[in-house]
Image 1 (cartoon, helix red, strand yellow):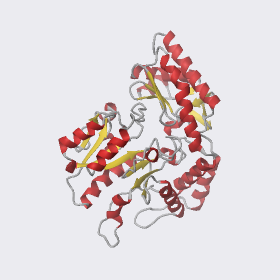
Image 2 (cartoon, rainbow, N blue to C red; image 1 turned 45 degrees about the vertical axis):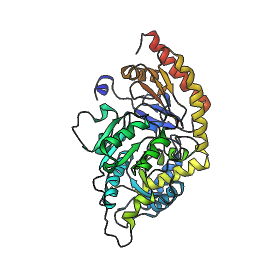
Image 3 (cartoon, rainbow, N blue to C red; image 1 turned 90 degrees about the vertical axis):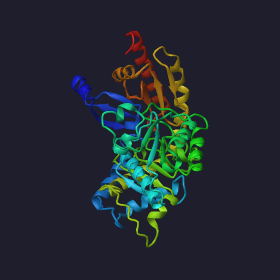
Image 4 (cartoon, helix red, strand yellow; image 1 turned 135 degrees about the vertical axis):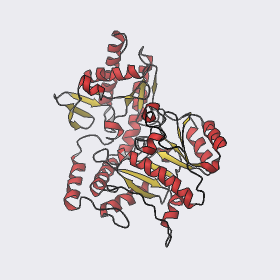
Length: 408
C-alpha cells in the first residue's frame, strides 16, 4: 500500500500470449504468467467464449447436497481421469487458499471419522506458502506472511527445514505420530523463493508419511496443470500418490477463479459410505461454479490440443539453459531452475530484488520479487524461445543498470 502511495499503480490494460500492455500502451513480456497462472497465455478468446456461452445458459447454481451443474460434473470426471491417484474425488473451491483451507479441515475431520480425534497437528515447512486464509496463514513458512496475526491455529508446526527429511522425523518424534494429521508439501517451493526439491527429498518425506500413517498433502496450486513440465502434476512426475492434492491457478489459466482438491479414495470413503451418518459441513457458494467449469474445460482443451505439457517441458529446459549464465553476474547470488517451467534469479537480499522490479519494467519485463531476494521467472507455456531470449536480455540489462548504480 505504501508503494502505491509513493509510486502509483502499474496498470495493465491488455494481454496476448506472453505479452501485456500498460495504460500508456507500453509492451512488456510477462515473465510470471500473471501470478503463476496464465499457463495457456493471455487473450484466449476460446475460453472467454466458452464462459460467455455457459453464463448465458446457466451461470451457476448451488453445489450443496446433491445439486450440481452438468458442466461441473463433466469437469470433475475429466480431472479424476488425470488424477495422480486413480478414482480420486474432486472437491471444487474458489481458488488456492480455499483449497488449502479445505484440505486442512478435511485432514482433521478424516481422523475423527477414523476414530483418532487426537490427530489435529498440521505440519509444513520453512519457506512454504500455502495461501492467505486462516489455515494457510498459520502454515506459512514465510515469517512476513504469518507475523502480526496472533496464534491463528495452535496445532500447526511450520519451522522445519524445507530440504531435510530428517526434520520431519524429528517433529514426529517430538509430538508423536498419533498427534499428526497431515504434512503439507509444495513439490517445488514457489512464493518462498522457487526452490526445487533436493534429489530424493520428495520420495523420502512421502515414505515417512506412509510409515507413520500421516496424510501427505501435495500443494500443487502452482505446479499443477503442467507447470512442472511433461506431466499434468508434479505428484505424477515424482510418484507421490498424495492423499490430498490442492490445485487452482492453471486449472483455468487464471481466466476466472477456481480451485479443486483431489481426494484419494481412502480419504473420501468415510464421507461416501451409503447409509452413513457422516455429514461434512463444508463448501463454498461458488465451488464448482458452472462458468468457471466451462473456462477450465476450454483451458484443458487448449493444453491437450496444443501439447502444452510438452511445451512446458521444453520451456523448463530452456529456462535452465538460458538463465544459468546469469549466475556469473556481480549482482546475482545464484540461479534456481531445473524442475519445471519455473525459476528464480537470486539477488543479495529482499530490498535488492524489490528495487530491481521497476528497473526490469523499464527494460520491458513484467515480473516480481519472491522469497528473500529472488526474481520470479515462470512464463506462460506459449512463450517462444525468442521471447525468452528477450526476457533474459531484459534481466541482464536491468542487472547491469543496478551494478552501475552501485546496487538497487
